Length: 299
Image (cartoon, rainbow, N blue to C red; front, side, top):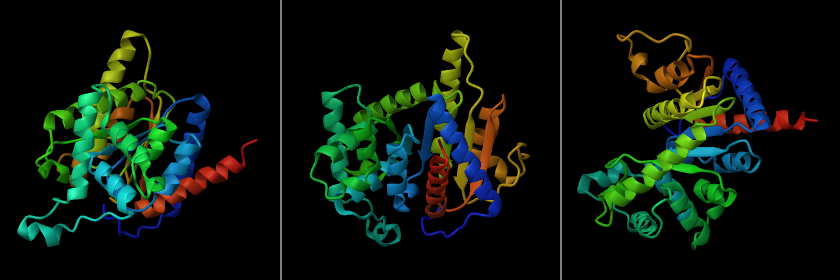
């Protein structure tokens, strides 16, 4: 999803967004988790202050991102800007080889050596919080570290520019990201009555959630518990009109994992799946506004 896309919410999407805000408030009252999974373009779209405010007010209890989310969050905290410049720098092999961004590997490697249980999200959030960063206030990972909210990062080796650097240690990166996966599973274990939202993540969110939910349900079944009543919400810019039935295999929509996995299969036993179309720059402020409206009406 392009961070430059302008996609105002329709009236129907606005209604579904208000329903989502209501579900979030209800989950909060039940002490059930509200999980926000995201692709890195969420960070590039400049909505951090809305998300941080939601975190501070208890409306987000876990954030989960891909490896690129770390890079954009780190760059924004360091210099107040982030860019990729793929078409320019790939021509002569300079794409991704920024010295400052490569320092993320140093943080990962040191964290791996000093704490075998720390997650990648916490390691970077701590480094930003305690380091000389001029824009810590717009770092989601620093906010999560400050608020003691799980921030889990789910890395695919070779996906991210820091894997190009000679100081990348695949074992360290994998170990910290696996620690985060286990943390994420522990949050999903309590998802009954909660909410899971996915913003602009076509692969990471549905695949990680699918495996985490399977593990959590396996453990719950051994304790005679159920994880079958929760709300899932996908925010993206695809044209999705039917969130009740799985598309046929000869339809391209069948291969859009967030629909098939997050909105259909994982809630088939009693949960609710909801799709909201719109750019991150529109949807996240609108969600924040809806929460503020409902919060002002609370006794």
